[in-house]
Image 1 (cartoon, chains in turn blue, cyan):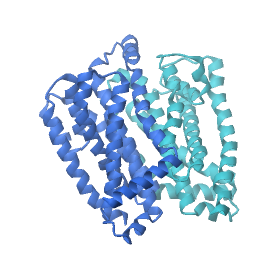
Image 2: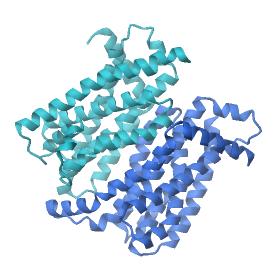
Image 3: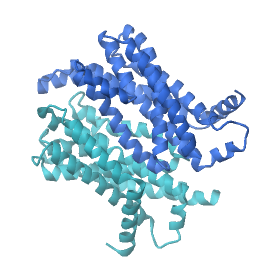
Image 4: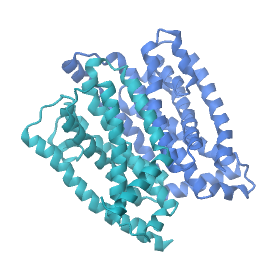
Length: 243
Length: 236
């Protein structure tokens, strides 16, 4: 506990020094701002291409507000870890009494809190979800929060350095933004559950149900457990890879 | 092409492959091709300019990553002792990275849209957009000590670069969007996929205005690089 308090104090000092926190706070507004155009966009596509976007609203909102924050903050986590390995922070920590698990776990914890906040804030500011959906989104935001270290750990474990990490992020970024959206087009088929292998499937799937008033709790329960299990498993991989 | 530049270009291609950019690009091309199969045919043309713009935006992160990495590994400082000048360094990066971006766009467009794309506005739009994104990354990255501190401010740059979409899409047309340099390349991409008809004045604007910005950003890149990368070496 003492080590975590020290890490936290140190972070708060750095936060004041750079613009990190300001930009983390701005993130939700950027995602929400994209959705302020959704009604105008829907009307425009209807007029111009005679295509009704309304059935796709929950998919669009979930891509921006549920997957966007974990992708951004997961990428930040990955870059922090890779940066710190390059600066030999990990080597320095190994000569202290802090267990090797503590530091990456602390980083993941901060990321979970920030992402959960970011998802809820962006949904609230977007003005595209009603109060009921917003309340139901609280556990979804937490699930997205746990997804952030899952994505961040994968990115930092697959790249040997910052720049390879970026190449991995490009692929993961596009994959996470698109592939979990595919089951939206086959919601009537049990095959959609095959996408459950992918951790990002669960928060968006739960959001679609919260938005439409369908079955909701199973997706939340399974998703939280699954994402948490994957995060813990990846934490072990990351500790091995980063030293 | 003179000897120094040719060597620099070869080295950058080599580094790109080693950094995994080529594999990443191959995956991205496959993903785009797959995802675009889900888009209804009449919407592929209208969607293309937005997709290409979103995809090219990532070049900003690639070039910034290269700058941070080379600074961290101190290869930038080793290069200072060689005949390589700043203009070679920047030109090689811009050339190799736009080549990578161009190949991605050509493959995705030919597979998912077909040969009906208008070649000149397509190539001009992609190249100008890529150069603007690359320079945006190159100019902003040296202002921050590490990539994790740059990544969040960079999303603000990205947001500004994307604002012309609001005007182009017809949502809220406003002349002010024309001030953002990516507006021209977006118009060119629109013309490439037969979404907009450009007047002569618009052609001049869409080609000329980004070129002015690119020239200005190149000059700014030299200043920023000297001040925040090269001379900072003495401060270590």
